[in-house]
Length: 68
Ligand SMILES: [Cu+2]
Image 1 (cartoon, rainbow, N blue to C red):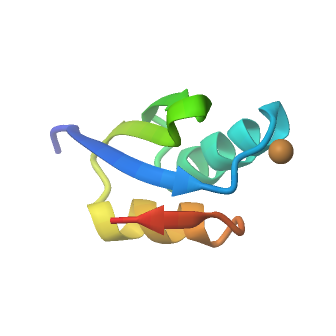
Image 2 (image 1 turned 90 degrees about the vertical axis):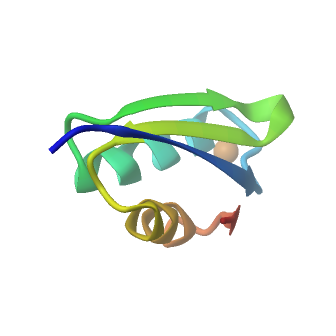
């Protein structure tokens, strides 16, 4: 399966711990995923083989608000 780029607007990330929580949630779903977080911009970019909805759900499950 090929990777697809997804950009999510995620609110509620306030520190490096939040970035790690989001990163780990995505990696749990897809260990091969590439994640780039721009916290001041509330932007989370994910390159993954997983469907967009599953990635969004994994981030939301950590307690952050995800605009899909
Ligand atoms: Cu935090």
